[in-house]
Length: 189
Image (cartoon, rainbow, N blue to C red; front, side, top):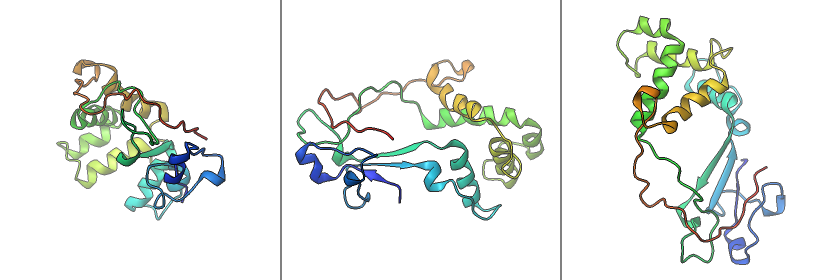
């Protein structure tokens, strides 16, 4: 596994965890305060073509990035003396359905000819899934949408409140207000 976490024992000392220091690493199941995984490294290998796992691995390989597990027990609060992470700023929270509609609409436009053959939008149909994956990953995992277009599709709901611009209305950020206390800094690789 390629997880690194902040060991709970290190919370007491304030030492924290640095991703490039092997002595501070431990498996996620031994110290579940905060975890990070390199998505491409963990999932970016290919499985048997045509299986769901093949598409999952192909997407991970294309997109990459870091996956953080910010577990509640490591969250800083005004009264916490030991913590591993804190929310610095909550910029915007959007409804998942709205964001999915925006992203899906962009992907459908990218492969409109294929989607037209499927009829009405049905994300559970084999035709629709094929068109979606072909638009994102390409045929036989070759081509597809460039990463910058995928990133733009993902970011569009957050950039505006105006649906005509691909924006989604902001939702309340209940319970996610930034905490003024200082968490233990964690350096990314």
